[in-house]
Amino acid sequence: MSMQTTRRDFLKASTVAGVGFMVAAGAAPKVARASALQDLAIAGIGVGGKGASDITQAGYYGKVVAICDTDRGTLESKAKEFEGCKTYTNYKDLYAEMMDKIDAVTVSTPDHMHTIITAEAIKAGKHAYTQKPLTRTIGEARYLGYLAKKYGVCTQMGNQGSTLDAMRRCVAQIKAGAIGEILKVHIWTNRPVWAQGPNRDMTMDKFIAQTKKEEEDEEVAQDLIDEKKKQVEEALKKIDWDSWIGVAPKRDFWPGIYHDFQWRGWWDFGSGSLGDMACHTANMPYGACDLKFPTEVVAESSGHDFNSFPASSKIWFQFPATENRGAIEVTWFDAKAKPEASIFEEYGIENPTDSGAIIIGSEGAAYSPDDYAQSYQLLKKGGEKIVEKEGVEWRKAPEDEHSGNFDARNKLEWVTAIKENNPDLCWSNFPKFAGPLTETILLGNLAVWAAPKAGERGETIKWDAKKLNVTNLAEIKTPGVAELVRPEYQNGYEKIDWSFIDET
Image: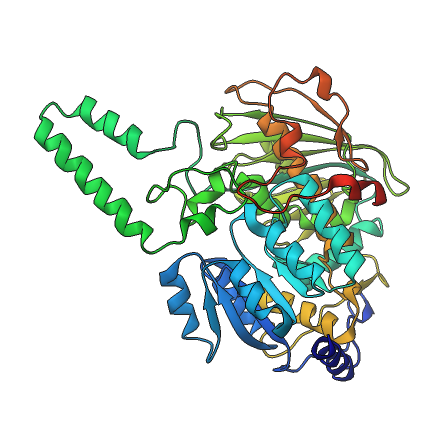
């Protein structure tokens, strides 16, 4: 305890002035800077793929003392980057040995493990940077927000576009009325770029049966089976499969369809196109249009088997009126589908991109041609540019020599918040932004779950966002809807006590 107190005192004492200035649009604001802080001890959990850059960038601002990855090859390779850091294939072992020696964690595992790993760190008073989507299910997002607020730690989700000046400025302009009253929102993505669709799973028993059916020569069939068994055995030497499965239902390992990256397309492990990209692409519309507390959602998909996500989907969200806007509909498109061409033509937008967002207002539209709102256009009908409102304030994220990369800048904002002992400095902190954003996004997946038949609209989900309840659950014929809201962890992992929802 004394070590933790000392660290916190040091972090507070090492504060640099001028974090997160509110500045007038078009002005040349002063920029907050945070110097490298080697006394901040950081652990990285999940250090392959996106996790590789997450822990490297966190290391700009602290000392990486431990890393964990279920892939032994990834772990060994990444360890070379951090002198003296300890390595683990199971996060439980890392926490058991290192929890009293660390101040913060980065969590960049498959979605199904985000909550259990992050929650344990927060309960121990550690600051957390967790990749998007914050969680795999809706209830878990509320849970992490609740814990972050309860324990007062600094948190940030890995939707790195949050620190872009353009994104923040666009949000401020829309909220200030640059395009008038908000009427409708469309968001679209080129994802998935991984496999999705029904009947994709494979086990050794299934492989044996298929091989024997397709290959008439018994000796050839047996050779193929023996070779596949050898391949699976060799692959399992490189991965701690039980730790990878974690809280999910047990299933056999099979090369190439789960680890790595392909996990995104499985309901048990990932959250599909929506979970992967909406925390980026919907980030600006969410902030600008206050897309909290949807009341109804319905989807249409290309069909799924409750095991793998569909290859494509379209989702319609309904949001009630707020103090700042009327009731609106938000539409999500994936698999390179887009809104009707006439919408773009009306505002003079040529060659719309495969990922982006457009917010339709009574006096014009805001168009983001990428996932992060790195750039945006405010347009009248016909394509004339809207002059931005003067004097609109927005909070600039801190900058340093690394933050030309906005992903690194997101880590800088997190570490600056730690140094300032001010969790609210993080744009995408769990309680106020990342958690509610993730809840809204994942409600869309609940609608996709309830739309398993190809080409047909699924069942409409009516939603009480404050209580996290499907209000028409008794009428829903699709099985498993409630479990996708409040999951039950498997394999002996500590289960969430959902009574906390009454406190939120």
